[in-house]
Length: 301
Image 1 (cartoon, one colour):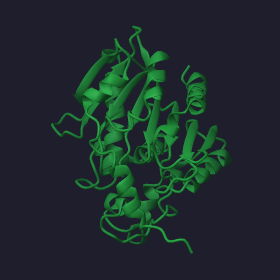
Image 2 (spheres, rainbow, N blue to C red; image 1 turned 120 degrees about the horizontal axis):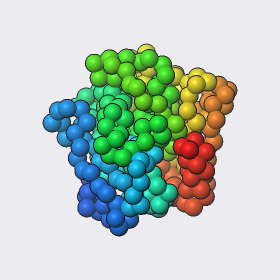
Image 3 (cartoon, rainbow, N blue to C red; image 1 turned 180 degrees about the horizontal axis):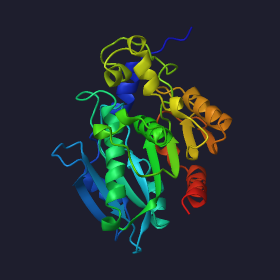
Image 4 (tube, rainbow, N blue to C red; image 1 turned 60 degrees about the vertical axis):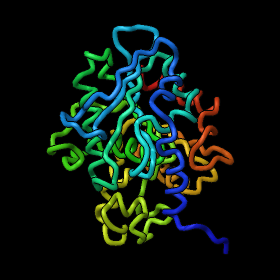
């Protein structure tokens, strides 16, 4: 039998390798000249550094822009709102060129606040963008989510639970008013009960940190934190992208998500990227960008 490293070591090393590797200045350079940038906007009416977001408006000025909310990866315990942009630079440029605003959000890490803090923060950030759409020239009727790894999980969870009245997913139990038009999920976990290494009891296991204990001792919470729990026919369309050789999040997570969405009658497409690992420039390929644009054109009209 082939020996493999423990799941938490692989995930920590891979996702941690990008932590704090890029500065805000580097990220600004990814956006085209003339991009309007609003940085470090507090979205939760407090002073927490993890309750900030950035907004990028395309150089071509319009009265309003459809919005793509960017949710970074990092095992729920690493990175910030500038993460994942470096290796997805062409995709970022595509969004700007096609007239989409991008809002990149921070959320509390699992090392300081266990689940559901992360999804509460994501919902609160999107609600802030919805409520303040006019101030930032955002079209509040056209909102898409894009997430990577842990961010893919949060994007999927937000998109699927949006119509399920999960008061625990919102600050003070106050549900959102916004609706999600589309979810772009890049290699996010969809079911913690079948995720590789899900029952690793090491206290540094990312899922253990997220849930506040091993899955075997938090099965109900693990189910509540799993996006597939909330699938129904009223959910938004999904474009799901996963690496064939993902060594952190087994791509069967995305296969399962796609199959259950299809069973529920939800429009979705799954792309398994040949030879691709857990993250990196292979996900910025032209054929993937084309499908991303096709989905945006169809569901963000």
